[in-house]
Image 1: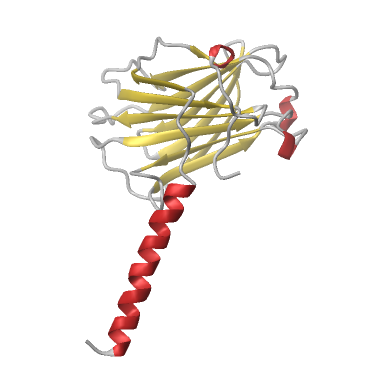
Image 2: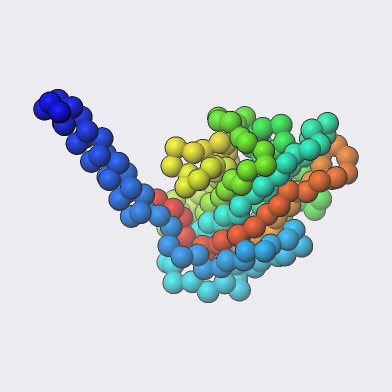
Length: 214
């Protein structure tokens, strides 16, 4: 083996070790809440979750998603619903993916759709395989971005490193004070007719007062 080949192999091995080490270092800590078997009727209140995290005004939630998508004749929407109290303009947000390969956000007040946003997938999704759907949120009390609010989502395979399938975010600052009590539940709905085949959700994790890589 000549010197050039040895050098190339050394660089490749070193890069792999660096990547693995970095991934371990920046991985999320143990969640404050975990439920393996989760249904769409479960409603999790953030106020009832204890945490040692200190980033007031933020949270992260993640769930595993699996769906065969057998009914493609109608548009379906699946993901996490965030309920917010004490805001005159918003009482809930739905954020997730649709079965026509789009990420989507809906903002509601008193059963009226106030705003929606969609972004196409950036990579291929394999139906029938398990993927992760992670939401991050901060309101105007979050110290680093004081006065601003935002929600974002990543839909990805594996650990998420280079595995993003779709992402979306929206600035919520214009909606004012979003620091009221929040609850999380999962949803699956048809946007054109009845749901015939719901996806399987599992492994709901919640980190209170926390944002990744911040």
